[in-house]
Length: 273
Image 1 (cartoon, rainbow, N blue to C red):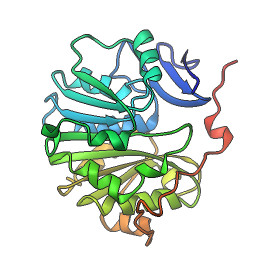
Image 2 (image 1 turned 90 degrees about the vertical axis):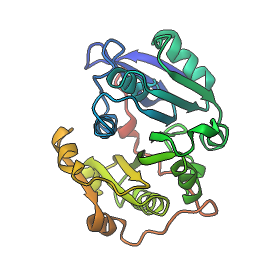
Image 3 (image 1 turned 60 degrees about the vertical axis):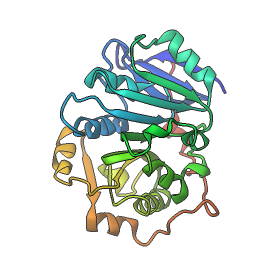
């Protein structure tokens, strides 16, 4: 693994984490409430609608990156309890050295495989977590073992009543992987919605899709507010429209799980000139 932190060429103050040539995270260390990547902004809008505004949350993040969303939760909901599971200690060491967290952040980082680490979390977390963020990539692809219904059921067991899972996916034309993941998450929780840029959700180009799921019915009155919050152009699907989106895609099991498709090289391009 080769990880580097680079100043963003186009957004002064932002820093990009690039792992093996793939942009993984973007953070503004001076103002963690300011977010760069579109999918991160969409997840942040979901976070803003959880519980009461500013109320502390209990959160679990599967995948650390530059700790962008843990920093956002810390900045917008002081007093939150957060656990982060990350496979690569060297990655977190790099981020902490150059983009340190406050000593009283309430963010606990644990090391190891995300799925295996779920079983090592404190038992007291089971049934108490308001937010689980699943943002797990090995290079530019999502590993197969974190795409199955068995995995999502383990994640869903953490949720408090009304708690939410937010999953970052990447897929391209046809959206076979994303449709399967929507079906699979929907087999583990009561309701699912999908959020993305319009052309991505229509399957016209490669990009990120955020799935939001909950053991309790999702308050679908959120959707207009999520769309209004951007980034634009935005599209959200839930209920019957989500079933149409899934279009009969099978639920993924451990026995049949495959990694997400690799993106086109142009999608991962980082301009360093």
